[in-house]
Amino acid sequence: MEETGRAVVVGAGIAGLLAARALSDVFERVAVIDRDVLPAGTAGRRGVPQGPHAHALLARATAALEHLLPGLSGELVAGGAVRADLQHELRWYSGDHRLSTARPRLEGIGVSGVALERAVRARVCALPGVTITSACDVVGLTATPGRDLVTGVRLLPRADSAAETRLAADLVVDAGGRASRAPAWLEEMGYERVPEENVRIDLACVTRYYRREPHHLGGALGAIAGFHPATRRGGCVVAQEGDRFAVTVAGVLGERPPVDHAGLLAFAESLPGGEVAEVVRTAQPLGEPARMSWPGHTRRHYERLRRFPDGFLVLGDALCTFNPLHAQGVSVAAVEAQLLARLLASGTDRLARRFFRAAASLVHGPWSIGLGTDLRFPELGGRRTAATRLIAAYLGRYQAAAATDPVLGGALVRVFNLVTPPARLFAPDLVVRVLRHRAGTR
Ligand SMILES: Cc1cc2nc3c(=O)[nH]c(=O)nc-3n(C[C@H](O)[C@H](O)[C@H](O)COP(=O)(O)OP(=O)(O)OC[C@H]3O[C@@H](n4cnc5c(N)ncnc54)[C@H](O)[C@@H]3O)c2cc1C
Image (cartoon, rainbow, N blue to C red):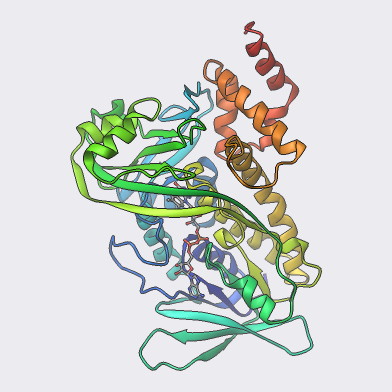
């Protein structure tokens, strides 16, 4: 592969770091810029408020990260993260039912967002030509007048009395997260507004860490209970590095989890299964609870813009965000970075068009499965087409059947892990099993 010029990445979150890894195959220099001071230790940071909340690497994330950064899983595990079979060592609840699971093994990792970012940053930082600059805001793009071409970024270092500077680039990748300014930057340059889909779920979550001991949950990695339409509550407990569990409890559409121990325990006891409650009730709390609110899913359809400049891409949460309890964000960021690496291998010609088109179909699966699940809430805004209504109704029946049928449960867990496309759930053999279950003839 021929090396060329400089790429700039906006944001040193997981998506930006993985994009830098892909860009380093082709670009001599890759400059990653973040507005935060990036902590060396275990502290969280302002720009990544989800860092201290429970994180699990789904099977797709685990495989894609290992492909991009060989040996990373082993390093995470050596640092105390917990490798587990997500079919059998993570318990999945949907509605009131625990999904029955099946073979084959699905490998995943319990690791906090903070530890994951630190490990990925250390690996990406060590790549030839990659630099990471912290405490520096990207405040806009530079472009060639009269041509659809981005030529770099405008930077404002966060030091007192620092002046705006410019950094030229052959390619700029925005990985600025859900608050990405890319739509505004493009509008300022005269492009039309990027079409956006928003589904407001008004999520509020509270996370607390607990000491993990071998007897807890029979040694399992943890449990995930998706939002229950009747209670508007969900939550998870996931083993993380440092012999800890992260417990995250969450409410949507006005339901707010409390932060005091008694309130947190009562909330945890209202979740199906009892795993979250067991940990809150019996394990030693470590530190104070952290809160976060999250307005809802956002998907930005850059692929639908009629005009788009060369030399600019958007990925990660800046392109599409997913319900945190579905734990899909890192998987999608990693497969987008793999996509970028593949496309760059055949050059930068029409890169934006090729990337956004392929990324749209990549994002579509996790987006539609998340929506199909969340649109069970009648109060939820968002477009309900005949197709999304049908998907939501079918998934409700499917999940009830999957409580006792490991073929259905296993297939659903594979879809949640993004290793099988959601279309698999509509394959004739599974539809027949769902219908038979309803007729009580399984
Ligand atoms: C509560 C919660 C729990 C989650 N749990 C999971 C999980 O278990 N598994 C999973 O796979 N995913 C999970 N996710 C999602 C996952 O954390 C993200 O999808 C993933 O980290 C990718 O984020 P990102 O890098 O795109 O954006 P971010 O993490 O938001 O990073 C964006 C970065 O860009 C920087 N930035 C933004 N604008 C600028 C600018 N103009 N100039 C300079 N810097 C800028 C910010 O400082 C930040 O560092 C969870 C999310 C939440 C909210």
